Amino acid sequence: MEIFTAFGLSAGSGLNAYIPLLVVALLARFTDTITLNPPWDALTSWVVIALLILLTAIEFFADKIPGINHANDLIQTFIRPTAGAIVFVASSSKIAQIHPVLALCAGLIIAGGVHAVKTTLVRPAVTVATAGAGHPAASFLEDVVATVVSVLAILVPVIVGGILIIGVVLLVRRFASSKAS
Image 1: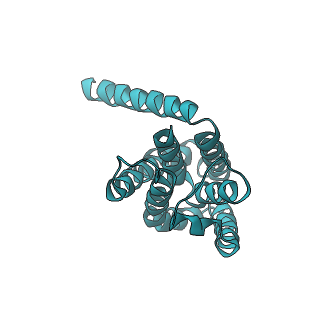
Image 2: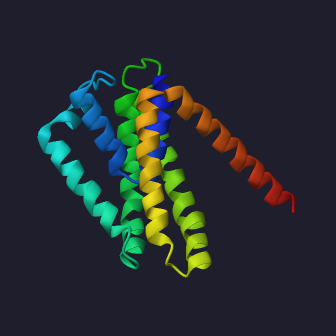
């Protein structure tokens, strides 16, 4: 089940870098639902939690302001995959069969892929459909999805695994049908 947790947290990082990190930090600090091995247990320190709260707030508001949201997405192109790599390896550290470098790469690819779809397909479609006015709502929805997926990935990882599998199948079908056209 930890592998579904890792994939779900990394996918959430592709939408918002700091929400999955904050969810992991808070749940690891205050509950027994997730335990972080060293060095990843540093996420549970009060300094790191305070920093994650601050960064979450900055990203939350920056992504709602037209114009600034595009600069934020450009900056986040490097941060979101990195956050995805961190939460993947931190949450899968008990799985002995996964080498830490492979786990970092998997998290990087998953979060980077989600971020790429968001910035190259979803946000441009929102811009065209709403003349940019829909970005705050789209951003808020992304934050909600990142939060829900992160919490579900830890509490009910099999649901996230199913959602991820269905999402991949739908993307492959869409890609295959667009190539056939």
